[in-house]
Amino acid sequence: MDRQLLSKILAQMRKNLKEGKTIGDMKVGALLALGHQLEAIFYYLGHELGTTLKVKQSKDINQIPNDLKDLISQFNLGEIEITEATDEIIELKMKDHSSIKDLIKKGIKATGSFCSFEAGLLAGIVEKLSDRNCFAQEIGCSMETGEDNCKFMVIFQTE
Image 1 (spheres, helix red, strand yellow):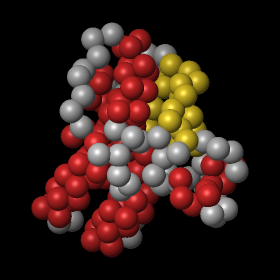
Image 2 (spheres, helix red, strand yellow):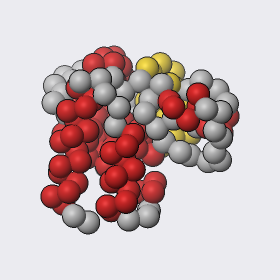
Image 3 (tube, rainbow, N blue to C red):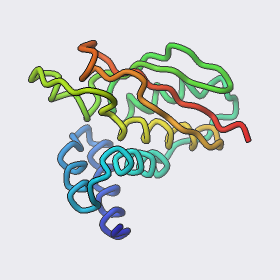
């Protein structure tokens, strides 16, 4: 992996998110530069980007879902609805995010998980907010279900 290239891509993605611009083409560029393990690469890129965003750590674990919602809006990452939040997991629905926004409008379908970038991004942001290791997974993709949102679960590491 070319670490310098990754740093440049992440810096440009961060700048574009802050300015409300799209980052989809950079994800494709990163794929071409880094190899063919799509889900792992996109998860990693999303996670790295999420951990580099300037976020203030939440003092109260119960505040993290609200802080996450605010950050997703602030960085123009889509819209989220928190469906469940405990000290172990956060489940949410996300729509109009960069991985699927343009594809859904064109009626393109896919099977399985498609939004590993957003899963990594959510995990990275929640790690910064909580100062706890997290893992996130897409548990329902709108590219497969035809719904207007994708479903994610963020899991806090307990040990």
